[in-house]
Image (tube, helix red, strand yellow):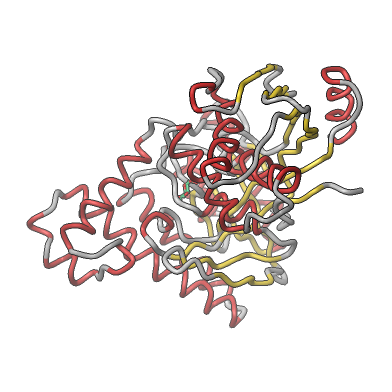
Length: 378
Ligand code: GLA
């Protein structure tokens, strides 16, 4: 990938750029909890967006996307927003950096990636974090702290891309560390690294290849439901709500909002239970809680789809320890915790039966927990 990016950089702009990369993410458990002030448990993966970047001594950004095979050019003022959606991510990063009194000058860039798009692995957070990290390094002497880099990415989603997302994806992409998951408390923003190397098990993603598009999606509606219930319960976020309080208010809220909030309240506890189980090396409990999350996401939060429910059923039938839809939902992947001796059978069955039913095989990605945003030196 490095060679290809540098060679395209040379074609478009001459010479070489400095290479930066940032990663997609998985999340073991804690879905739709981030914007509710709850816990999440993500890690960065070995799939990245990589960019070659070089300041160009102008006030213009010129950028070429290898994967989309498209070029964009824009200035750094609010009215200069590019038309292409992909370029708006980069424009947003520039603008959000400037809004925080960071320095951004013109630059040339070429980028590419191997984070599958729309699979729920946060290719957009990888793109945002890669550029946020690079602008911090190139123009700001790395004085912007890492949480702010994550927030720059999140605000880009809110203000330039129409997704009212939480902080999990950008946090994971910026803070990711090889071999470690991270438990983040999205209320206090305190986090802990958790070395993750389950003996005798693998984490594997099964990608339904059903496209997931969060822009203008029911994602924002889920968030609104949660905020309505929090307001009704008189708490800042659902992090501070209890099942008892929710039940007591049941007659005042719509059935839909009730089930959304119920899922979030249960899910925040599951993250803590998974951490305890991991500390004991109790993977059976971890797996059972993953199935519970799937059930909640499918029935109460309603962000699953037929294909993902089907993959979850296959996992159960194959004796997979834990399986659930991962990320925002509406398509994408399941994440599966599989005992080594069940792995081959599960993958073969998932491919075969999914193809019989939907006409194509799912894609399989073994999870390798890796580093997040960085300068690529070697
Ligand atoms: C998307 C959002 C995240 C988070 C997840 C669901 O990935 O970007 O902030 O809400 O969905 O857990």
